[in-house]
Image (cartoon, rainbow, N blue to C red; front, side):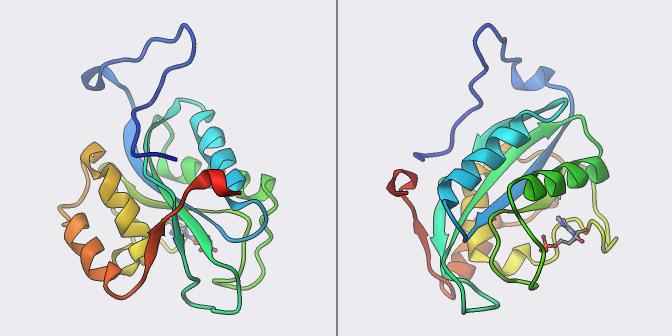
Length: 186
Ligand code: AMP
């Protein structure tokens, strides 16, 4: 994967200029550390783009990170995407969980290995302390593997809390290595 991209509309589809788009923006993080990790990320991006009233506006580069909370597992690939969606946050969460299930994720150990993990980081105009869907995502501000890719697509932010994502990312990256990954390797 090269740098951040703008959404490429499909054949014959017209891409609306940003001012005319409907729906709200959301940043979503993708992670995988089992199997063909790059393929799982690609499948997640395609599945998100195919959701009703939803499209992927921008994708960060893919990064490789050593596991954090549990070290007895393989390295993760991580990526952040910016969506525009007409779905409400709980519906988007349900769809993310369905996509995880369809790609073989079995919830066993907390912070354990997984084929695909999808978290909603931020959703335009939404803040919530609900444990089912906490917004912003409660652990994002310490995680270099989230903040570094998020900073790459942060120019797409709209209606988000006033956070210095690039500064937080630089601070977190001093504690944790995140390495750009060439997704053609696997
Ligand atoms: P995980 O195993 O890390 O994917 O966590 C999944 C659990 O976190 C689910 O029970 C979700 O309801 C809950 N959760 C709370 N806030 C969020 C969020 N912002 N994005 C995704 N899952 C969330």
